[in-house]
Image (cartoon, rainbow, N blue to C red; front, side, top):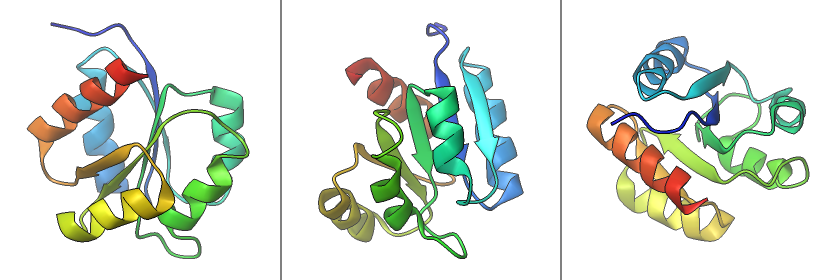
Length: 122
């Protein structure tokens, strides 16, 4: 079942992950916007007004966890860490940075399900 199309901003320095997430979530009927670096992403979020932000944690120059704090000044969209870090560290980061949750990279089924869940709570 297709969900009502939502705007999702994906911020990740890895082009392969950006493409994969875009392809997967577009099949769910969402409008996916990607940004390949942390710099400029707060401005983009302010303009796009996404329904959800998927944010990589490990990016050069400005980490996703630090960027999540800055994002709060520019958008009310829920932020979800999207990372290859281990789940224990992600759970701790979610609590510490007060973001909506996390999704592990590489789990395409989990990506679809968790995005749908996060969007339904919004």
